[in-house]
Image (tube, rainbow, N blue to C red):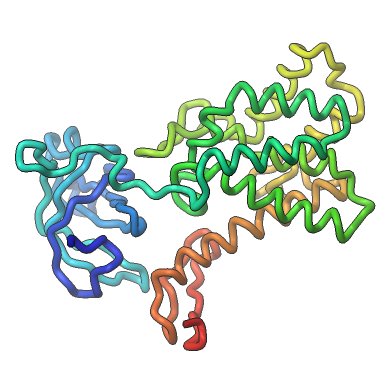
Length: 318
């Protein structure tokens, strides 16, 4: 049975089929272009550089394509890396896989299981205005919501990652609201469900994930603010009433700080809680992904999304 990418040891050579997750064309110091790849299979993602790329290479090796990589696993700045010896597209005539679906990671829950959890929480949104707005938006983007990743790379970057991230946050929100009964459950749950749905317009999808023009220029926070306005117009709800303004504030403030992309900082209890559970779920996922690929008694690769820190996996972790 062919080993997967992360099953190879450091300095071990391989020739395996991998999906091109991303392919950024950059310029080397000598003036020659190279391609900074992110390769992927079901074991995870790993970067690799393809030096002195030709115009034909740049046109051929694009996100979503499956390639045969002849290379070796190395470490660079405490992060795993593919040293590329040679590269070619897979050939169906040779029985090699050509579909990206063989290489993508999936959420640890089925689409049906996640749909059921989200539908159940809708009964706890007792505010009629918020419930109608959430239902309106969720219905519009339901198919993509349960298929898209939550990010291009850093956390929940897999098929169904967006909805799985949301379900995880809903579980945290329910536990926190049970402990702190002063929390407005309708508002918090509505904010959790809607906070990242804008990523269905910010990103291109789970395979070869890139940012759309709208995503680059506006971002998912602004996109969702606009979607709430559209929902209010369709439902004949006054978007200037307090319930809607509070919901919009949760969306606009959920990154916590201006430098992290939020137009405003949290000024509501529920907005502060939403920010923290979003950050907590993303952080635990990024750390877990790194530690899953780490031997007990060793430090993980650096995690860019967590200030480029490495994390120790205790011997007792086994």
